[in-house]
Amino acid sequence: MIEKFINYKDVPQFIRFCVVGGICAIIDAVVYYVVDLFTPYQVALISGYLISFCINYFLTINWTFKTVPSVRNFEGFVGAHMFNLFVVRMGLMWLFVEKIGMDDTIAYIPMAFISAISNFLVVRAVINFSKKDKSSV
Image (cartoon, rainbow, N blue to C red; front, side, top):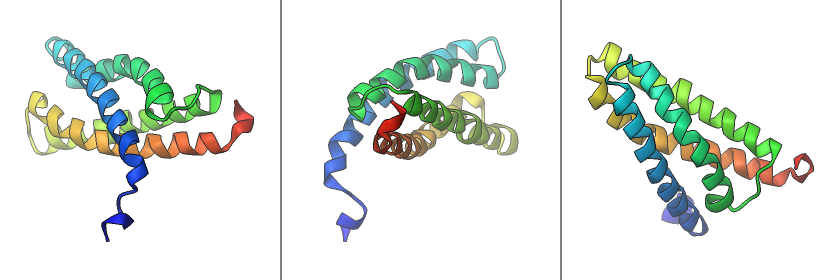
């Protein structure tokens, strides 16, 4: 039954994704909490995410998914991350802060965990799709 949900050959890939994600999450969080001291949470959220994104792209492409940079996977990666930033992360922060009334420094934590899962699924789909189309390299 569990085999329907877990493809064991994907476990090392998921572990690499978590390591890269952990490194980038630390960068994102540090930048978020520093910038949040003197700007609205939205600015802090974008600042941290964009800085960690630059590192994330190269590590994810080269190490996590073991492929080579291409225009297609870069476009897909940017699209996936912009979806994650502006829909998932901003949406969750808006929900937690504006609607539920959580402090943004606390709301950042569950938002980060939820968006990490969403991001893995979307980025993996984009990278796997770009691997299949070799003509775009």
